[in-house]
Length: 187
Length: 187
DNA sequence: GTATAATAAACGAATGATCGTTTATAGTCA
DNA sequence: TGACTATAAACGATCATTCGTTTATTATAC
Image (cartoon, each protein chain N blue to C red):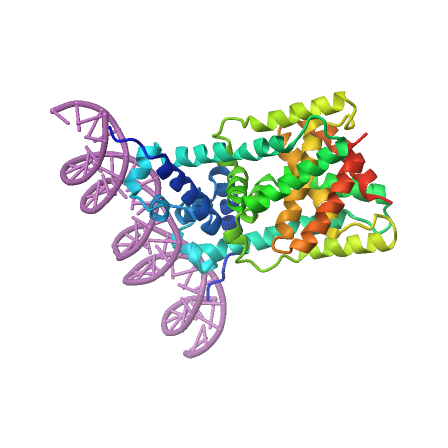
């Protein structure tokens, strides 16, 4: 029996993510994706049942990736200050290093008609549990989890996209942001 | 000579915005838009040169709308506290009341290949000038404008979308957020 | 104040291209 | 041989756009 080639599936994923960054969702057709991946359009259907399912599967795979990436960098014994610094810096690096993935996930998740068809993402709940622990240990103030989440991640997005390709400005803004968020969230 | 019907153009815009919320960019074809607007596909091309131009024109019209809406609610003599409260509350209302427009703009602006083709938005610079004035008057702390911007607007987005249709939770989170942002930004 | 000429809006139908998907066939390995 | 990958070719549907025509509104002439 000839084996399915997992490398080929990876090629498809990369092609999807690249095309969606370069041309947006409307520019990422099966034939373009196949051409980019160096395979036939029909082959895509060996690995995925439909285009919709394909996009959803890729999204679900990458949507949570950032959170495990983050949790890997975090240590139980870190001080609150260091924790916030690490989270923000790591998220910022992730956006810059995984630029294509980031924009794919952003585009996908800003489209309600796509997101509605997806099961809930799991990765985020681990982050919320971490917030709960930190509140219990009186490391961070007793603030609604969604707010903590919104303040840790959303402003960074703004800085990363607005200061894109202006490394110096981005860096100094990032450190200013970290100090502010530390002041705001820590007890 | 027959006149162009401005109502018809408005119908097209509304159709675009509705369809993009309901089905995403890929679902908003010219024929669907025309059907939704109650006109012929050919008529769309009397009002716009191409689909691309149409989307761009509609985006540019609405992308700035929120900032004028905001600036209208703001008074020179407001205290810093009230100012921040007003900005956050007004932005939150805007998202909820102009849901379709908000999601259209979000989807469009999260697609780099679309945004790159657009001229810079003007409305945001007025907000930045306001920040400059407030810093000069030592109402808000001397923080980078992009950071102030990111903290005033981005977390609200998160709360509005995550607490969508949970009015009570959203409201209490919003007030908590307002207090935190006031603490953080005011002198 | 009619009638007529001029013009642009508006339309349905058709354009070729491309879409997502399926089918028939060839190739590859156990 | 049987099971599976991979493909080229073909599918009907739909895409953005254009064409040829009709319709509605204006300006001019009497």
